[in-house]
Length: 581
Image (cartoon, rainbow, N blue to C red; front, side):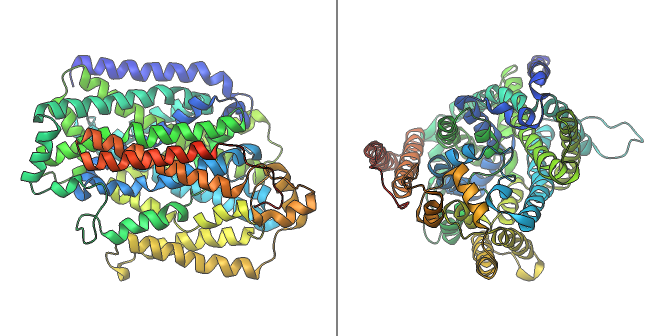
């Protein structure tokens, strides 16, 4: 890092703080202003912020590590969530916006009633805001710590001061992000997210471009992989018997993970952005924009850098470091500072979002609901800032004690697997009750943790997902059938506000006198299938172009065309119908 590099990084950090200070006035009105931006976000800003949230500093390091261990096909660990994200567009985005809650956890007491709903809301708020969210933030801090170590930027710890340089690097980063995230609320987070996303994307393109030019282009990259015995790293779909990615795990990604995970209907910070949109239509557009940015626009620069690292740095003991080490190897002064700033941007966009989102749970769903229901707007904002500090402190501990980014990512997926099916069904079947969701959450969390006990050995990840998903189903389904359904008043109030489609609400629809649902569930599902084909077809078409893979290009383009035609045909207005088909 030269003086020019440091000036670039400093300019970025100062401008970010300036934006936070400028927007702080928007966060003073109360919880709706602080946590959902006064419900005034335009769709393009909300969608970009959703993409920036998932584009943390850990993402390029995580992808580099995945490719070193499992090749391109290893990315199905996160590509599989594309299915649930397409469903978010067509099934859930508009319903979430119609719910007009502050957090997705608050919707618990809209959908369910009585003490079970209150217990579920409090349990989810604490579980997701503290242990799960803090581990997630620690995940990003771990990656930032690795970048700092790889670039030789660890602070010097004075003699006699407790802790080592790794701990203090995390502490310094934590304090900076806390100040930034607590100043302006959601508006400050999403406004800077917009610039952070594109800065981070430019950084990834620069690293990929310089690395490819140095080794002689894509053709030389492929020859280098073959010479190293890693030609299989180019496979985008694993074959049965693959040693790098067990086929059973791949099938679990495609067949289980996306619907069993705790974010199967959106969840968390994504829902926060949808709730902050101006209209239902804007919420749907925001979800579409996020999906294209997340899967099509930014995935392949990381993949290219990961493949170059396999050839240029074959003996790395920590494959996660491939990305920052290639930065050091190839980028000239000034550009290195720009890419370091892009990683800081990616880190801040994700962590600030998770801080604000976690604080929304502690404030709206615990403090305002159970501790001080009469709190003023000023008190709630102050509590939100205090909650932010608590979350950052706990996350710093997770970052200090963790080491493997990919392992931590899989652990997060494992402990969040189980309640996904219930979260989907509660929108489309009146019989799902609070006890079922509570049982699914607790059972999934407990089974996943138990699967890491030494008695189970080194279990394949696909097996762990399968046991957790179906084990939790074996718990929540009988619990639902053995407990009372929600009251008619609760179900009718939920239906009137959210207007869910499908035959699962036929009885309630008849009671409230609504013969024409807003959408046809069957037609909507067909549109989601066509959109999934379009998304993955375009994504792999781009991959085929980048990697000069003619067969992949031809097949993927054909899939994309079929999916696109399907969407065009299904855009024609459906006839009005009754009964909720």
